[in-house]
Length: 151
Image 1 (tube, one colour):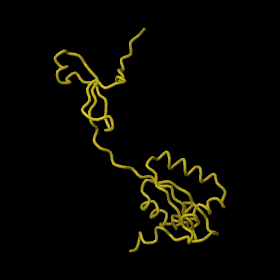
Image 2 (image 1 turned 120 degrees about the horizontal axis):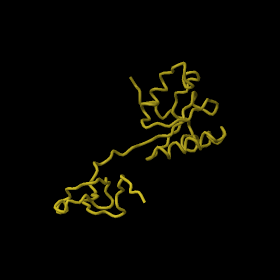
Image 3 (image 1 turned 60 degrees about the vertical axis):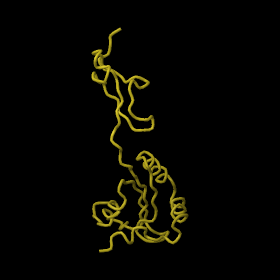
Image 4 (image 1 turned 90 degrees about the vertical axis):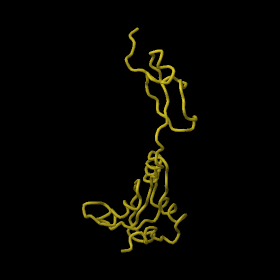
């Protein structure tokens, strides 16, 4: 049986300097304290730098504040920036052609896969179900981004 040149980390830590709940990274080392004297390479686990908490947003825009408007469903990692981009009304975009600029619904997610999954789910719904979703949280069809861009 040919041996592989790629080494995999062991299923259990050889040396750990952090609790199991801390984010860690495995790497191969030949200088792990007292083990360095043996000349062996061992897998050790070291702490990773803390990661920034991510936020991903599913959002729905409308061109009028009411049931008769055109709806646009999207996902972004920066809701305020994305809504601002939509308000620029570029004529070569869907939101530009239809004037879809009013934020009427949004949901926050920790993982992008969850946000995209929710986007696909909502895009698969009929119009009446989307309207019901919006009116459950925003019955007055208030533009949720109305005060973001006062200049």
